[in-house]
Image (cartoon, rainbow, N blue to C red; front, side, top):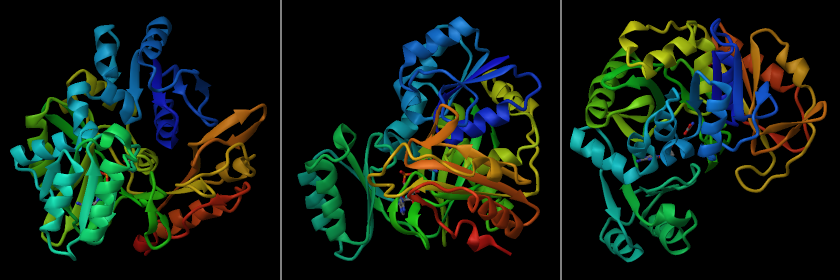
Length: 416
Ligand code: AMP
Ligand code: GLY
């Protein structure tokens, strides 16, 4: 089978890498792909008609969509109308990520635990409401629409929340994504990314993973797309998994007809798990630690979802620990330079139990240069977290480019 992976990040490299291990896969195309993916097709992830035409022309047997934007735009509907097989939710279901208000309202109606919230359509209404709230209560202000992961503002108190409302609705920093907002209670606890492959009411959960969202060590500084991850999560016991399956995933699948990955971003609070958000796709960088632990065929699993026979498959997981460290361009998540030649990729990638997934890279002749904020994801496996961490950082130590930065504390909290 020919398979097409849409997207260009580390998640897509990991998907392509795992799919290529299937004995039934002949070629994995990536559109547009990056410097690490083998067979790239120069079509942007949001050019849905061109992607459809390519898939028809090449006889693609399955398309796997990485990023949220084409899902929210309706790529699955377009491919379906053309008779193409595609893994992902349709446009209606993708609203769970495309509209935070839709997600909150669906959760409320389905009785899924989530932070208390209010919805506003104007800055005046939001500011007036905040003014009535206690001065020291912490909030989270969220733009309703897609904002490349930047539309969520974590606020320590009312004054910060008011500033966040102005940033979103007056300065319009996230454009029309901020026409409507959600203001919700800020929860505390630890976060878990729980991904489930879903088809109608059936689902299979993937191994839980933990992501590091902040740029700085000790979880300081601004949010990013993710600076590292590990899997499994030693503090996520079976009872919590059962809870998430019964109280989150099952009711959501009753409320929304969903095929694809439902990613529940959970906060494990002192009073139990609460949903922070849903994504409708694989997590990045969670995928880079989840797929290396999957011992069974990814194509089988994704096809079973598309064909609505998930009950027939059972993924098997390695007990080994996986850690990924994101190497970023200096300045990220703010402005950064591109086009810096990367050294040491071969030396790092040939270490035992190490895989270097590319994200913001591109091939220029016979060298690889930086081409984005998050550049590489260095993933390692080990029988213990200590060995996985040491292997990942040993590989990081072989790689360099001008301005490279990374967090040194990835998975440190679970080191035995
Ligand atoms: P999102 O873009 O919705 O994934 O949110 C990004 C991040 O913001 C989450 O992963 C959390 O770290 C944080 N966050 C979102 N909602 C809340 C909340 N209600 N309380 C505390 N943190 C939150
Ligand atoms: N790792 C966070 C995300 O994929 O949205």
